[in-house]
Image (tube, rainbow, N blue to C red):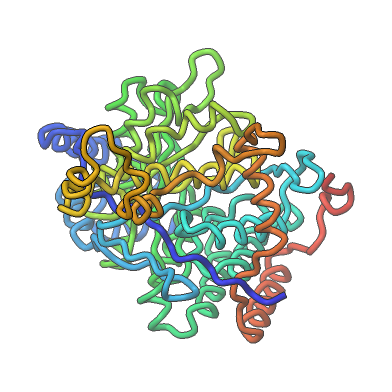
Amino acid sequence: MNHMETPALQPIVPAYHVEILTADQRAQLQAATLKILEDVGVHCPSEKALQIYAEHGARVDFSRHIVRLDPELTLGAMSYAPRFYTMGARHPDFDLRLDGKALYCATDGCGVETIDLSTRRRRPSIKEDVAMGARLADNLPEIGFYWPIVSAQDHRSTAPLHELEASFNNTVKHIQSETVMGEPSARYAIEMARVIAGDERSLRGRPPLSLLVCCIAPLAQDKEGMESALAFAEAGLPVGFMSMANAASTAPATLAGALVTGDAEIVAAMVLIQMAYPGAPVFHSLLPGIMHPHTGAYLGSAWEGTILYAIGVELAHLWGVPTLAGIFGTDALAPGWQSAGDAASSLLLIALAGAETGSGLGLLESCTLFYPEEMLLDADIYQRVRYEAAGLDTSQEALALDVIQAVGPRGHFLRHPHTRTYLRQRAFSNLSGQPAPGGDYQDPADVARIKAEWICANHRPLPLEASQQAELKKILDAADKELGSSHSSSLDRRGVD
């Protein structure tokens, strides 16, 4: 099947901005983060990372794996981090220029179950679901870059690399992984990125792959995550760190306490990268939750929780780096009122706060369950925010005073040429308000499912060159052999239905 052209990106470009924190509050939060890093420190079980910290002046307790950072050391290291850079794509038209002018959003990831488009049955996710998600993302102009939306559970320890291969083969957009953990896997992922980039200069100037590493709340780092981050940074690929500190369980029950706990986790990790590779591109991702007092669940969409993501944007910029902000994350069980309501304000707030990137489209049940149609429903909400953030045109043509005068009192504007011209420019949802046979209206979720089915059946992105496909296959084969994975698993044996 011939490939179909990928629609141009439609980032959110705010015409106005908001500040949630005052300058004094920002200073208070930063001072609190510095105090935590100086007096409490963070736990880091990686000997490689501990050595780097120690060599650059951190106070390291090697027996307890605790790192403490003096404020001057933290601020000095962070001064090397770049405020702006580019996250490249397979095709340059889809490069993401993180210059503070626009917000680009990604899918969510890395879910573990899929609602099968054909059978509508719930099943464990597989590599083909990653490919399907990439094709959907490639077709949607609202999605600026792709997180492998689910896990390739039909593979074992090299599942993250198989997710990358499925992603690179099914979208021309930037790929960001949150599952490549450990230096051996990272080295293979970097080689895959090098194949996509074509040469070392492009790899560093327009990196087609970036990495997100989750911290361990409270105040701890993951050994495999930090060592993969160091490998990515050495290669010039962007690396971000996310905290999901949970107020009342893995963070204090106050919102400010949860914010500074998570911020300290992220900053400590970024400091390590700048110590090892000054000037390496990093980003900050603060997604604190609030524990539900009855269930103990992490709630990223509690009534008070949405504002935390926007404050995370302000803290990232205070440290002088771009942000990956949280959007949409919902514990809804199916597409519907709750999944839409949970997304209602988070995207608009982080856009107006100036976020460069955000992730969260397409998953339900606290980021574990992939409904393919949910990507389109979330994209519909994205478009509403894109228009809301764009502001108002008050030019003379838009004010239309001459048209108002021509029509006059008790006239009708429908017949005026100005109406025909500008009504065609108005934007409307292609999911809601769609007529059904018999004069009724279709459920937007049903319309989204039909559109998702069409995209999966018909959209074929620009393929990789045959030589690139062969190189990726060679890298995967080597990784499978070295890391002990096979192309089958218990999932294969029991089936996925």
